[in-house]
Image (cartoon, rainbow, N blue to C red; front, side, top):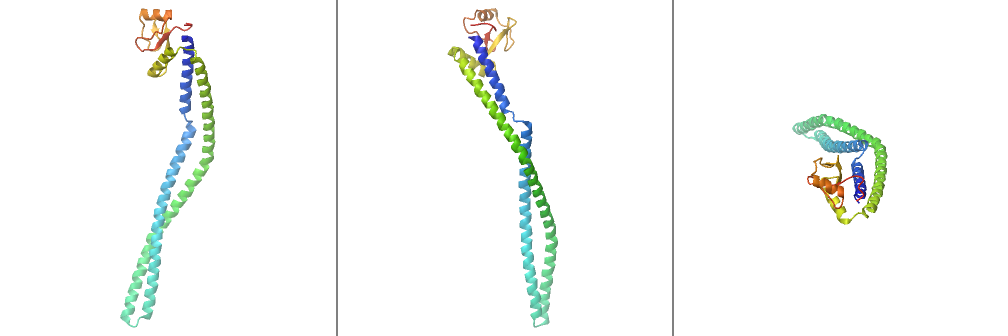
Length: 235
């Protein structure tokens, strides 16, 4: 029975390895996903900057339009003025509006240039994301195929384990599974060189080795608790 339990453990270890393999995403896919994440984050940041600049430019253009209208009204007012004093007042207003409009144009030009640069950045980032998309799709498809293949292997291994475990006494199987969980891997280990536990390498007492050799009951290592057996034992 221990020989069969050893075969069950071999399948369990293979399942452990397969599970570990399943969790290991290919580096190329990880790198591509990280690049997509970084590009997307940068695109979002650049778009936010462009939106803020666009609002400032739009606000400046509205103010400039208002100044131009008011300057035009001041010019027309100066022409309609009935006295020199009144004309002078309108001319002063026109000058103020013209000065402010010039200042506003000078302040707005760098904003427009910066906005243009941000829009170029946005275009470049979108192009990079578009170029990355086919690679991501190819890598993603390969990963799905890999995962599907591994999952089929898991189903096969679990089926074989169920078949083998069915012939093992329930108490023994339960002990094995408890020890394997506690020891993270091995629940059944051989006696090494006729004297040591194959799990923790502790030298076994003579009585323990004798019990293992008789094989009439389940014998566990007094140190690590693993089930002991001698390979080739048909018990």
